Image (tube, rainbow, N blue to C red; front, side, top):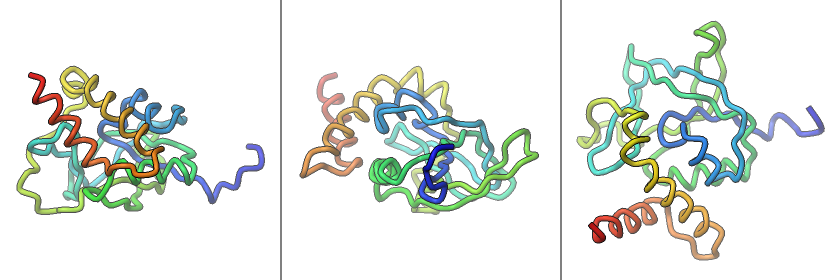
Amino acid sequence: MGTSNPATVSNVFVYGSLLSDDVVCALLSRVPPSSPAILPDHHRFSIKGRVYPAIIPVENKKVIGKVLIGITPPELYILDTFEDVEYERKTVDVLFNDGYEKLRTDTYVWQNKTDPNLYGEWDFEEWKQLHFEDFLKMTTKFKEELELPDSKTRVATYESFYQGIANNH
């Protein structure tokens, strides 16, 4: 595995827009290897007024997603910035290979555990049909702005982008 120090890379469990290789590629300029995984004792909610989901701990529920493998520190910084203040990066154990193996990984958990805007269940297939194209444009814009000296937060980029869309309809 070359000379890279394994301690410097992270594995990140993703469960929302980052399930899309295109969104990951827009952020990281590559698609890291990944593996399907399950996060036990969490639930993936829809959020009122947002097109992306939130997860919070909920006993006896599970979230199906995937683990991005070998995320470098600069890439983790991009993901942290993308997830912004609404999420908190936490270390969790996910299951893969049909639950036979456990892997310690980072994931982004919604900060506000009692948020009244969380509801139902978020659906990736529905998101792909309804929101993927706009979200990918927003993500690309976020990444371009991230490289500027006075970059906006992801929430600000998201809100100005989606306001722009609303005003054009």
